[in-house]
Length: 202
Image 1: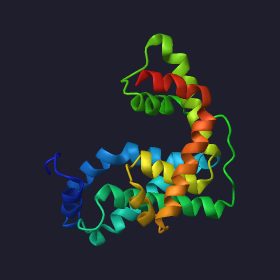
Image 2: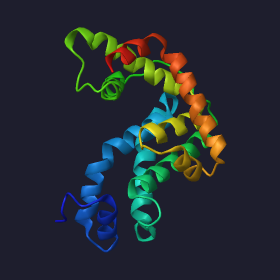
Image 3: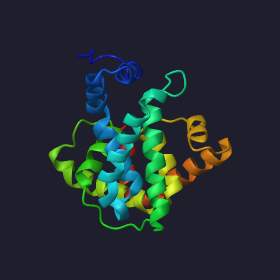
Image 4: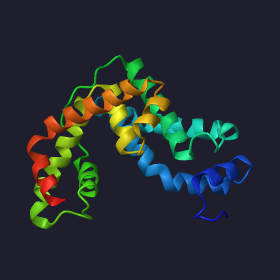
């Protein structure tokens, strides 16, 4: 069994060399984050396909294990880029513009928002606010054009800088910067009243 504290890159190299247990550690470490990323990128209109795209992403990761080179991108960046490309392909093939509707996983967004406000969990009296804010956030993400949603999620979920975005999305720097800026402007406008308490809590 590999050391569970090994960096992702070393685990991937061990897996590529035949250590199946190293893959189990990688999967356990990143399963939830990668699924959330795919789910949010596809939006509620294609939510039913999230499991399939998520599984396909891991299949690609397994298939491409021999081509991973740590001196290129970090493992997480490499894996999230694979997932991003698959999700964007699915959005293009579907030919559907993501239309906002009522999300059914506001609890997940609640956790996401609470983490951004440096809270472990909302207090009892704030629970209704956080639940509504989480639902609104998912609604707002769904309303973004797919390209802007991808830029926002890569930046906020995977920690990609603007330079990283430009490289990973094969875009000029200014285009990547604009996509992220427009996404943030739209989200701020869409979140409206929910941002005032968020700012006050910091």
